[in-house]
Structure formats: C-alpha cells, structure tokens
Image (cartoon, rainbow, N blue to C red; front, top):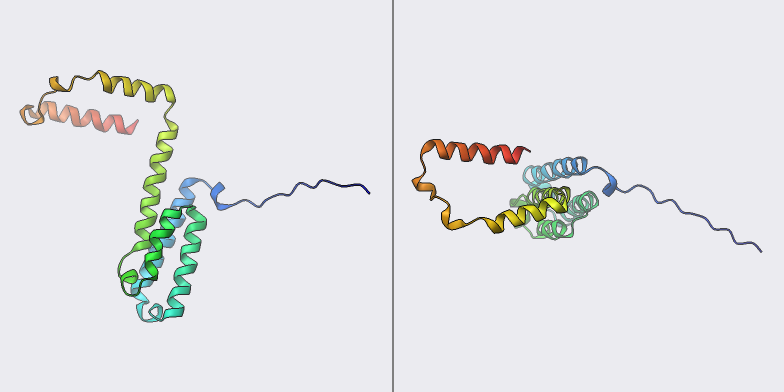
Length: 153
C-alpha cells in the first residue's frame, strides 16, 4: 500500500493583512461597540445579552489584533456598570496601535543606524548644553524646527 503525502493549505488569517487595514478595522469596531454600550445600555444591561455581545466583540478584536494584553483589558467589559461606562474597547485598541506602530518603527531602523545614534548620544557632553530658559526666541524656534524636520523624515 502506497502512502501519499498531502500538503495542507492553511487559509489566510487576518494577521497577514496590512497593519493599517487591521488598525482601522479594529478602531472602527471599537468605537461602534463602545457607542452601542452607551446607547444600548438598557438592552445590553441584561446579563446574558450584554455578555454575549461583549464576548463577540472581544473575539473579533482579538482576531484582528492578536493582542492578549488588549483582550485582557477588554475583559473589563464583563464587570457590571463599570465596563459599560468606560470606553475599554477604544482605549485598548489605541494602546495596541501605539505599541505596534512603535514596534514597526524600531524594526524599520537599520542596525547600523541604531548603533550610530547610540554612539552620538554617548558622546554628547550634557554639561555644555545651554539651559532652555536662557536661550533666545530665535534659537528656540530653530530647535523646534529641527525637531519637527527630524520627525518628518
């Protein structure tokens, strides 16, 4: 008897979607769910209906974000009255977006550039830096412009 090897194809998960799509989708679901918590408070205040709706939203957000921390924060929704008054879905989604965007920004910076930045920071003699209160307005404006330009690149 001959044994055949079959390669199984897994369906695409939402984690393979671009970050921007997942972030916008998760934020939209979060805002709508939090708005429904406020508007539909009498309906969702019933123990079974509210908990089922919360479980569905938490599952959808976990499927999009894959964040266990956000899911744990979203579990606050199961606390009676408190969970309905705090926009936990939106807060946890914004925290996830901030965390992921920082992680992606760090991954985009090449290793050589990270080492160069660290070397420059180590060489700066902080005792020679002029106190911000003694600088004139032109210098402050030029520093602010330089910071703005460095963040844009």
